[in-house]
Image (cartoon, rainbow, N blue to C red; front, side):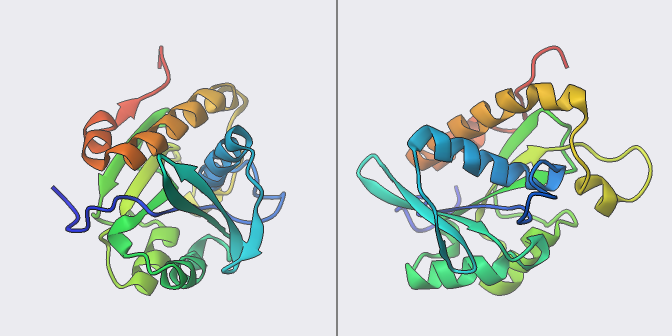
Length: 198
């Protein structure tokens, strides 16, 4: 269905911007997933590859984890040296990121595809030289008016914040499923609504 390389996901990278000012913004939902997984697996992170690096052992496989600290629009500058160092092909990379084309409360897994104006993805494609990698897209909705850049750098509303734990829980499940079986994960998380009574 997708990659020729059957080894599965070897690197998961969680997009966002570094620093407390951005920590709870829509653009940082990827890094919030990293934090959630980190707490669950009791991970420690090291400064490496212009980002924060850690790993988990999952079903006997070592899965590399990376949070680029280059700012979103230069994410590729962190991911490329990491994937080069561990000799990981793009089709074995999962990128966890915010997605304005999906409503808040919807998550989606896809392989390859367009960039949807996402500067983090654009930087990754530029540095890896391909669009052929996995994405876990976490919906943050589109602004009703005003500019997108300001919107993605704003905090979630208090109503949205109440649902963040559900989204993070489901995102972690999605990550674990894609590690087990990418094809099943793509089918199971096809624009899946994770918040009830939306």
